[in-house]
Amino acid sequence: MTSGRGRGLRRDAEANRERLVAAAREVFAERGLGAPLDDIARRAGVNIATLYRRFPDRDSLVEAVLADRLDDLAELAEQALRRSDPWDGFQWFVERACAMQAADRGVTEAFTACFPGSPGMEEPRTRALTALDTLIGRACEQGRLRPGVTSGDVMLFLMANAGVLRATRDAAPGAWKRLVALLVEACRADGERGGVPLPPAVTPGELHDAMVSARPLR
Image (cartoon, rainbow, N blue to C red):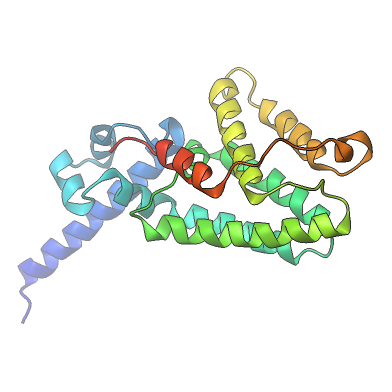
């Protein structure tokens, strides 16, 4: 039989976990995924030892907070794939993924970093890239997306948007919208833009290494 004290300890532990996740969501949104863990513990009203009992490293805390946002990214890509017009779906996805970044600094960084030890972060990213590859293939066959564009290029768009958001969030908070419009327009297979060959695409291995290096320090 489980004692009342044991049940109470479990309830306390679960309450601490919920407070830590809520605090981390706020702090990551405000300051990014590299925010000090001490600050998260302080906002949750617990000590740092309690944080480490619930989450042994930063990656596990990030996964608890942001895995659902990567699920949203995957669902966004799958919704784009279901749209009747592939070019419209491509444009719709890029604009909405960048808008998600603009709304939350933690999301900005989660979209552009790899967490190899966190299946909850990597599985939805793989889903998103798989849907994007199919969507891009259809838009190219349609003749409205310039040849040579890849899902890796879309990840570069998100990296570029992350950089613009970091630089302009306070001084020019709408600047990212202009960047996104320019990036989408550059992908359109119209006129001279469609006839100019692109430089070599970033390889999947290069992109993976770049995203791993973007992961916040533990």
